[in-house]
Length: 344
Image (cartoon, rainbow, N blue to C red):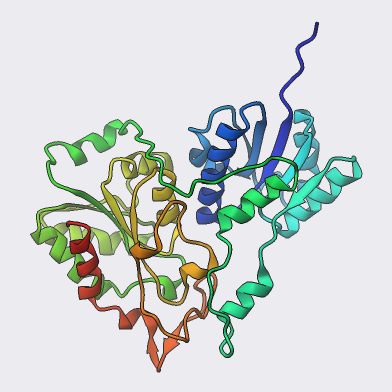
């Protein structure tokens, strides 16, 4: 008798980095709770490391600037994905590209479930006047809803699950001889309003350095690398990782940290994926919007309570509180007090 193949589910999440990392945390739970389901994730090849430790998952690369560019490229991707004979489609993105793919699969009679982004609620949360300031559904729960609508009863624990990975050989010297607490700091973000002023972050780094903790700086870009390298030169216990490691290597390094101090950025979600506690700093954005890292606690968010916040979901708009940028209202002492509160 021919053995029946496990049912296959196609999962779309093309960008951005933090959202893809959040999708990976959700799919780790799905893989455990639905072991007979084969997951095929379609995303940009650069994000493949997020999914390497999920059992039974297949990664299918998406090249939006290459062979999958434009409508013809999307149709080519559609033809490629038919090889998996999917039972259903889980669209965790709901972008123009993912919706075009969904239409093509629907025309073949394949069920599609798509992400509800909650745009109306988010607009009410960020509008200048008459804000409705309340906790919205976490993004990972919105992702899980996509699976629930397809008949898979996913239950999320919202707890950190450590995933210690083997250190890459090139990173071993960074950790050799370290007996102190290992603190990761990700002081940068794609959008400037989400970045804690660097001169204030330097005060925090100085505190950690004087405490003798090992500090690892994460980030990307030439300008950021210059800042991080400068800190490495000036502070005895600071090590800059910017521009030195691949994404897969960074994930392995993060998995060996004791805690991460981050903006509302992709590094928060990468640490969450590795099961590492994160202290996060919020300005224009707010954890109410649902983008707090999976398993992280609201009590570990460093922010000011002001009726003007938040002004933005993604951090691309500044947030003024009584004429002052909300990030400027967070004194370095507030961050240091939180570090002391957790024993650092």
